[in-house]
Length: 389
Image 1 (cartoon, rainbow, N blue to C red):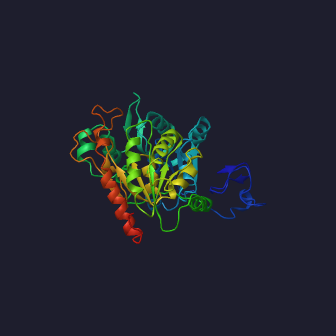
Image 2: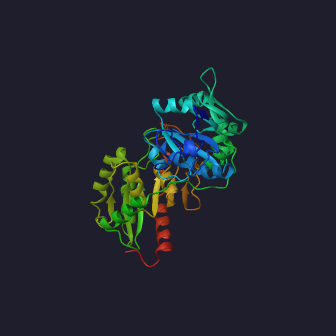
Image 3: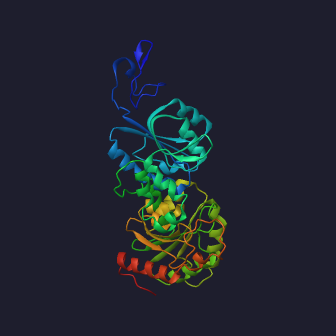
């Protein structure tokens, strides 16, 4: 682009407000280390934290299709830290009015809107792009698919029979189809810094976790949007009681700020049981999203409902024991590192209801004995020398 008597370099390093390198004059002599933009792609994914982690699995497929590209991601303030250190991303934008102004002035080759929401769809329609994939909005304020390949996911939201009974595709497959990418079962992309890895190891030592002990985490909560994705306090206490009978196992309570009181109650009840003291650790819940990742990273096994904690465990490549009730278990890929507990024969599941009309049968059906057995079998496989008390 020509501005006055010099060219604005089309290079990722050039910002326009300072030299890319000390004393370099890229606008006059050319780039010192040219990094072309290539295909400019914006991903819009504002919704739930677990959804953002899952969507990160499409990044390798994008880079395979567009090896010379710049990938940008727009998300919410409470989720953007999940994308820290991500090697596929050139920039992460946080949803706010200032960002809207910046994005509306940019030009993209492709916009990929993951969210079936009016705010994301509305912004998608306003942006300048040669190609828009995923979801937009029409003149009536209705959410619409923007490309033929997005129609399957669109129909999933409208057809309960298709979503709950017929669909056999994982969410990753559906996203790749929607954005016209080759599906190769790519993993979630979550990168811990060296400092965060060191913190996890030092925390393990500080709470007395020894080499050779299996660390089992309990993701005790879930989003308030779907409050029935968590076991009862009584079920957690009972499971802690069962697993505390085994040597070589440490038990860890995990969660965020909304789980603080719940975890304290579980800890208070469980610690009164003989044999639990010294085996149960209540990790901090109010130190921010990246520290929460570090605490879950100390675990070898994570027991969880279908929630952010489950997606985080998948992203951290832990062995996951996930139970399901209201949500669609077919859409979840544990990447051969775990077990799904499905409410066999329960006609109302999945249902995606926020309020249960049937006395939460799916939660009552969670098989604690089976979970105990799975943990013990996994422990014997990983650390075969340690036996039951």
